[in-house]
Length: 300
Ligand code: XIL
Image (tube, rainbow, N blue to C red; front, side, top):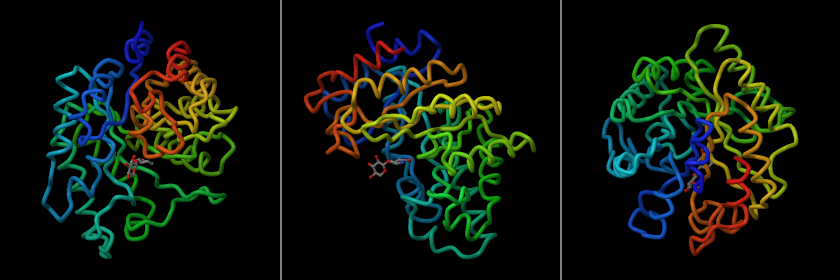
């Protein structure tokens, strides 16, 4: 096939991109978006600060724009994200009462998921809950500090009862290296959830890589999570300087794991990237395909 999405579809996978509502008026951007990708992730528009900036007042305008546009183009949508310590409004961060916060978290999950019920293939229910470094434990956040470690289980149970058709993912960065303590911490969480019947369907590995690309054991990480009985997805791929072989090995690792169901790059052109100075994406500032584009395409 001649596009990323169509090539991924040949093995039953998706190839997606992060989309920013503010760029949908840019013709170069939307031309590539419509041609190359069969899944989209709102880059910021479904985050808590965008969807519930003050308590109980929901704003779905920008997220609707992305979801409606994707539907019109025949693209699937990843939901990103319901519970995350970052891009979290101050009113949530300052809650100190557990019953209050539990109610607020559950209401946020149910209201946002219900808005898009049946239209989201996978939800990042909880994002980046684990600490960096050697601890392998959860990071400090209002959710962990006020609700305890059980907030993740609570979030997934609420999510499952709200939209039973959506795949429910735990998503994080720096969990690509199988030997990292953070990876092992997430692995233990997923193993525990599967053992106790807590609903979880997928692990999202963000894959924000340096110029060296994925660690040599990346495929081992993917297959090890998959062996627990969950899908894995590469959810936010970008690679400093976009070396073609680094993109190829990332794509190959996914294609080599049956339960790696799709890949999302975190933006279209280098100029669209949150890491723009590193030129980490598949299209240059003019919207031209970079060498990494062909490398990713031919790796599928
Ligand atoms: C980033 C967006 O790309 C930026 O536009 C925003 O300013 C900050 O967030 N991990 C995630 C994503 O889960 O939501 C982040 O996206 C990148 C890191």
